Image 1 (cartoon, rainbow, N blue to C red):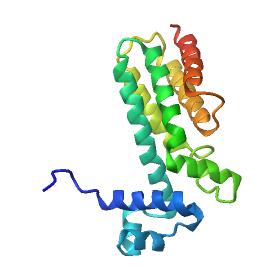
Image 2: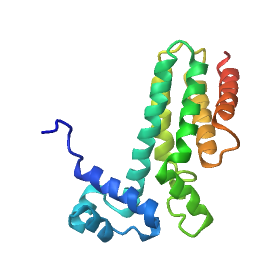
Image 3: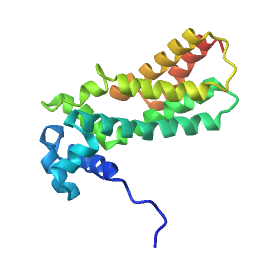
Length: 191
């Protein structure tokens, strides 16, 4: 008997939505189709994720958790050097991004008609940005940073937005982009 916890109903619904989105596109994901995939009623799907917009946000935020796990690991590897932690975190995110199936489905959809998810990563990315900024702020707290709270918030916002921009449209290899982001962070942080 396995001691691993079984996925929650919400996790099962979100997992199935990610698979459907990557296989057939977001426009073809319906609550009824999702219910059939999971083997539950449509009402159960609505109870777990609310509306289709709520489902989209749940999918994006769960994928964000995966990226933030890489960020956390990078900061753990550089407990005494904030700029190196930022460099490693940016590199980790930028290396993982191209192989993320949901991110690929969202970004590649921009070339077709199925762009409903794209605003969750761009113009309506408030939840995503806030979650990422909160994690980065918590990870930066132990470092000795000579910035006021407002300036530090601005620096965190800048780094998160630059990384997200490069996730959406890479301009070069992950290591080179991470070096550039670290250079900017070093200047802002006065390192």
